[in-house]
Length: 375
Ligand SMILES: CC(=O)N[C@@H](CCC[C@H](N)C(=O)O)C(=O)O
Image (cartoon, rainbow, N blue to C red; front, side):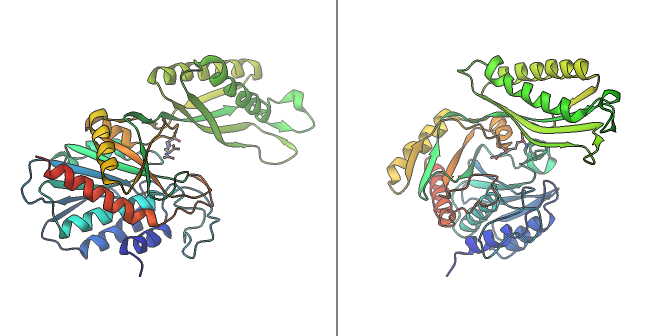
């Protein structure tokens, strides 16, 4: 028989929704919560998110676990028997796993409470525009703010039964990047009477790709990726507009500032050489995920003592996570959970191994109980 949390994951997998539109997801989670023993549970909603308070038996502290909720605009290409029912949307970053693990943690402590209190947060919009910062500021969280936070992210590259983490920086600083170029359209046969924004945009992409290699210290990692490019209406019309959409990733906050200055200089150059206008919008920006060193080292030592998990001390990743905002205000850490699949995060064929769900629930509940009993 399937574990109830694998079943829940399969239901969640079928209803991926964009950030702050996780309406069905929220309802499904609320329905699940309603079926649990209610004596120790209090539930609040915030926008499309949910906050669950589980009262301990003799609390002196409040722990927190955070799961993100949104899906991605990817058309699923997996061979799963329970694919997305929302065309063009997919849980391709494991948030269906993160939520079902969160529900597993709630369910465990609702039935077998620990001494301390626990708040489990189901947070919308991690992929953008970012739910963590407004959730942290929300009234609903103010009197429930945890003293320590933990979160996980699925990791396709590690076998099931593996946990990878490190003290200090785990994930990078990120900034979204939206660039709108406006020139002059015209007839394809009269290029001299127009300013072609396809040519300007492709030149600009080339120049943007020199920034990391030429302007950033090679010992300080950074990434600029343009993931989307839009321009033109028809093959014989010169494009008046073009739009580039991308993301910037850096390990140091200093490099993020430098890169933005260079992007603005490149934009000014494109404006003057193509006689066009270039508008830049940095969208939402996420703080690095900085794992509290003493808590992370304590967790890693505890994991080693358990003997049932393969612990990897990993390097930093250039992925971003708005959980970084939680860690800026509340000590804690994030870790990678091995789900062993050949396709990476944000891939249409991502098929994480579901055995990792129960492993994560067992590990997190045992760790929180160890922390709670350690007084
Ligand atoms: C773990 C993961 O894949 N996170 C996302 C976070 C998105 C950040 C933001 N919307 C951006 O694109 O800069 C990631 O893409 O790393």
